[in-house]
Image (cartoon, rainbow, N blue to C red; front, side, top):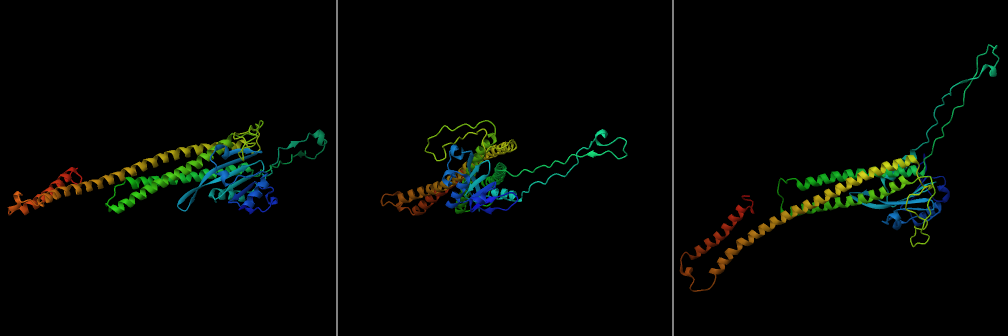
Length: 395
């Protein structure tokens, strides 16, 4: 999809270069090759592809070329019960903002709705200026009985300001930050519930197969939480770079020239990754202040993610510790079973040997004696293990 967002009007599709004239925000959603080529003609230079937006180098995610700022970051999205990351690109020029994304995001839809509902502020009500009394000598004869005339200055009309591409970009970033904060709140709730499930005392002991299923479920949930924290961290770091870049770009001074005339990189020629002075894409002071505030919010969210990641690691260690305890309990049972079977087997082996000089061979109570000896070799170890606490006895 190739959409044009104009203040006060619903989004419409762009089919030619004429459709993009006067448009502040152009949005490419999972664009085709034809739409990508049309957007490149409108922008006047090649646009990054999905592979370009997926690059992890800082110079690939933030760059400047021919007066346009090329920004990209991975963005997290919830699809059903799973979370997925997809790269998002922003191209900011003096005339328009071009966004490239390959998944629908609620943040973009929310800002698009705000742009569509935006109306220019009405002119303020007319208020008469202070009256200026004309001197009698200039206006009329002092002997006249007519009242003095006052000259009222014409009211000044305030021209409303339209929405610029920088304001749309700032609104997008702020909305994305709010969405990521909501996701992190859900991460905190998920970790609290997971912690309760791991450490709470189970009232009824489940069978071994249920315990194994419960342990597998815990490991899967811990792994999903760790993966989610990692994806959120990637999105926060990418947005933090963008806010720092935009917050430090000013519109005064002279832009430094690039020192890389020859390069094998597609988007490196004529590029500087540092904030440039007097750049067409730079934001005015009010928007830079909003970017600074967004950057502080991102820093706090990054600290929250670091704390959540530490908790995930702790919960993983705790889960593995409980699994190890369960395995040790099973090994104790196997040890008891194997030990109590050794002595009876030894006794049966001794009295099963075919020797004529066995003392108990001609004894009438020899058979019962051997059975009692076997029973004693079973009961005595069981009592000993029970007193040691291996069988749930005295601790």
